[in-house]
Amino acid sequence: MSVQFEEITKETLYIALEIINSNTDYNVLENGNAKRELADMEKAFLNSVTTSVFIKLDDTYIGVIDYIMESPKDRCPWLGLLMIHRDYQGFGFGTQAYSLYEGEMHKRGLERIRIGVLKENGKAKEFWKSLGLISIKTALNENGKEIFVYERLFL
Image 1 (cartoon, rainbow, N blue to C red):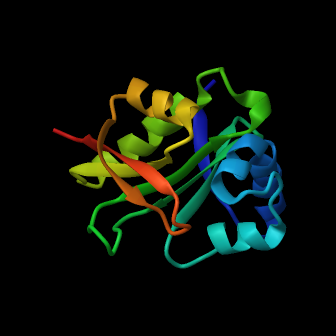
Image 2: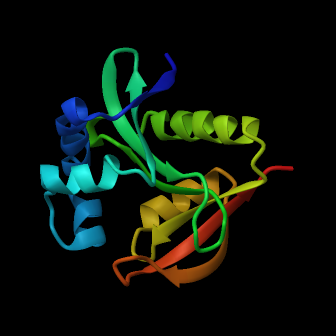
C-alpha cells in the first residue's frame, strides 16, 4: 500500500480539520488551542500562496501536506506542514508521504527544500533528522515562535 496526494478543496476542507484536530498536542504547541476551526483551515489550505494536498492511502484520507514553491524571504521551497492523522501515525506513512513529496520536488529541478520545526516539537525534530534533513539555523515563525530550520539538499 502506498500513499498518493489529492488537492484539498472547499468541499473536503472538513476532512483536513478532522486530521488537524486529531493532533491536539501539535495544535497547542503551534497556537495554544487544542482544536482548530474550519475558518482556520480555509485560511491555511485554501489560499493562493501555498499548495495544500491530502495524503491518501487508497481511498482513506490519512494526512495533509502544505508547501510553498518559493518563499519570498529566502527564495527557497518550504514544506510548511506534513501531518498524519493520529490514528495512522507510527506506520511509516509520514515517511512515505515525505518521500513522494521530495521526489516531486526533485523532478521539478529544485536544489533544496526547507522546513521549520517548532523548538518544543521534539518528536518532529527526530522525524526530520531520521530522514536526513539537517538543522541549519533558528528563526522566528509568523507567530513569533522559535523554530529550527531544517534543509535537505538534492545533489
